[in-house]
Length: 111
Image 1 (cartoon, rainbow, N blue to C red):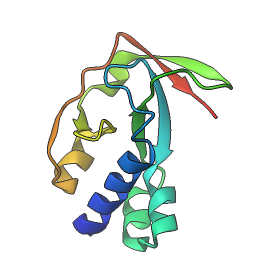
Image 2: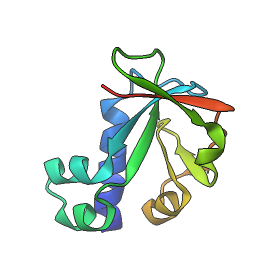
Image 3: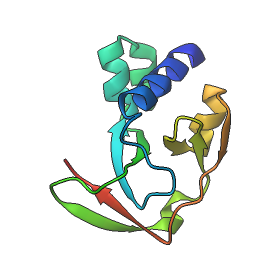
Image 4: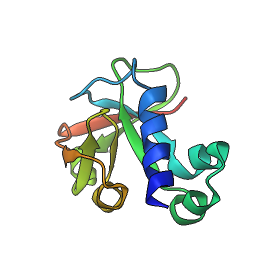
């Protein structure tokens, strides 16, 4: 299962590779379960459905935006790909990560 979780998170990082900006206040949320379902990993869907990856993006996207207090992201981790996950997922995925340091306020983009 950890291999499927790793592959799902790696694929999300690859999908947004050109859009990711480390340290950006703008971000998108990507549902781990939805991505795992498209990849055919039902075990990941069961355990991580409706759990979100944060993708810090270079520029704001068209559509609604909401300002979020950066303290919301306490105990989050950032992988080398730039995507951000809750700390417990980073530990379970067993991929190299560092502590995520968010901006004081973050802006979630809905697209």
